[in-house]
Length: 202
Image (spheres, rainbow, N blue to C red):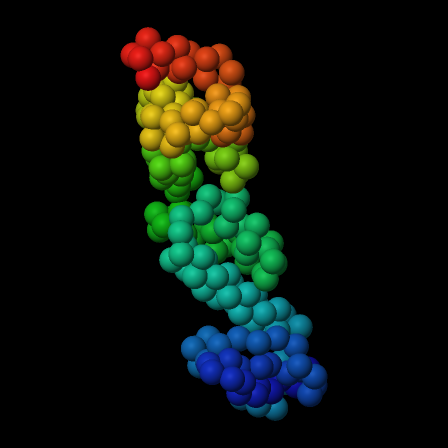
């Protein structure tokens, strides 16, 4: 197989085998692994080159995604598999895990903090959101226990800060209860929160 390369836009380099386009890499990778145009390479050499290209692509994609926000391991791998193969995706993830840039427990702590303290979700809703992102159930339980979230306190705060004006409208209480249930709060916790507020002459 005769290999050749063509410069693409920006820092892209297109590789051809027997004058047919096969794969694209970047100029940095190509300079590190340069093979002169017209070189006859065998299948093993070509596969080694392709593995290197896909691994570099996976590393770059990891860096891009993690620069935007934290990800769980499962989330990150799912996104990587849209553009690279399983082997390259896992190899890149292992590298980031080893370097400490990927940590499901830290990710879970950040997510729980945001969902509990900013979004004011119920612990049940928070648990579902974490699980949906691929975090292990033991990690979720451990992190939620460390936060010591009281659903009733959260409901009271929501009613006082967000829903108090709605209670004055027709069917207001029913609508507030429905809104709280959509956030994952149980009816028993909602009922207790209203009891506390009424005891304090809310």
